[in-house]
Image (cartoon, rainbow, N blue to C red):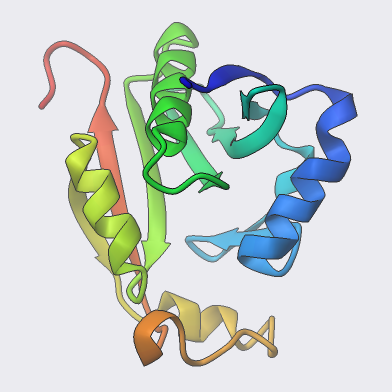
Length: 166
């Protein structure tokens, strides 16, 4: 069954917090050296058969020309939930007048890197050593991530929404 995608509502807060704790071990998410209180951000939830199935949270940059996807998660891998949520984020950014939407993932998250490329997103920047710098503030960040890979960097993916770009 196809997921139903809808904007986050106040009633979703317990599920959102649980989802963030499960995937990021915190409701505070770091991206590009900035902390985001992800359970307070706008975004979308996915439901399948009326049950919570996934989450995407967004941060509109000042000036509104670009939007950052802060979190994206699915409780149904390979079920189309992640793709549907990412598409909803793109539509939202486009409707808000953004020309660019972007996100980061850590260098160990090879599954996410493959997923974003399959969705038509492009690798644009390697933020070398940024996770190491965040560790000076958040000292309990794990050193090793997926597949035993040392987590050091963030990889930025983007999608241009304006007709004239990419």
